Image 1 (cartoon, rainbow, N blue to C red):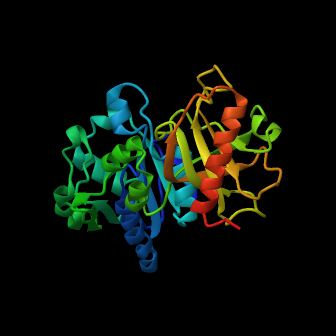
Image 2 (cartoon, rainbow, N blue to C red):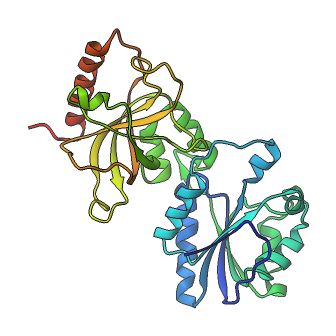
Length: 313
C-alpha cells in the first residue's frame, strides 16, 4: 500500500475507486464501505481510501481529540485489507474553505483520477460541509465517475456510528462495542519493560504504553486476548487478562498503561509490537492495602479469566 501524507501536491495516474470517510473506529458501516470499494478491483480500478489528517473535528476544536482508531492503526487495517493507496490529506484552513465542486473537480477527479466514488449516505465535504451525495451524483456524468452510496448499518434500530462506538467504549461496554465494530476494541503498541512486579510475584505480565491519541475505556480489568506482529507469533490469539490504568497500589505516578497477563505463555516478546483486544469489563481499578492483597486479587482475577476463556483444567 502506498501512503500519501503531508502534501496536497500529488497525482495518481491509474484509474481509481475512492472511498471517502473518517474511518474512526472502523465500525461495521466502514467495513461495508470498504467491501464495496474492494469490489471495484474487478473493474480494473485501483483502490484508494481518502481521509483527512487531522480530522475536521480536531481541526475545528483547536486541539487533538482522542481517536477510536489512531493513524497507525488505520494504516494497519488498510494494509491488511489490500488497499492500494491511502491518502492522508492535510486538513487546514485552505482545505476547510474549499468549495465542494472544487473538491470534486480538483481533488477526487484531478488528483485521485476517480472513476468510482464510494461514500456513506451522510458524507459531507467542502466548505461548511455543503458537499453531499446529491452533489456527487449530480456531477458524476460531467466528470466521468460513478457513485456508490452505502446505506446506514443499524444495530438495535440505532445507526452504527463512531459516536455510538465512543459512547460504549466510554461506558466500558466492550461486548456491545464488539457488535458495533464486528471485532473487539483493541489497543496497539510496542511492548516495554515495566517494574517487573508481576514477575516477582509469579504473575508475569507484558506492558505497553498506549498512544496519547488513543481513546481508552474506563480504568480497570478486562478479559482479553492479544495478537503479536512477530512472524512466528502472528495470526495466533493468545487468551489473556488486561489491566488498564495507573497501578495505584504500587505506583504514585499517573501514567496510563496497558498491562496484560497472557495465559500459559513464556516467550520473550520485549520490543515487539502487539494488539490487546478487550472482550469484557471485569472490575474497576482498585487500590489495595499492600502487595499481598494485590497478589490475592490478581490470582482471583486470573482464575476467573481462565474460566471465561475455557482454560480450566
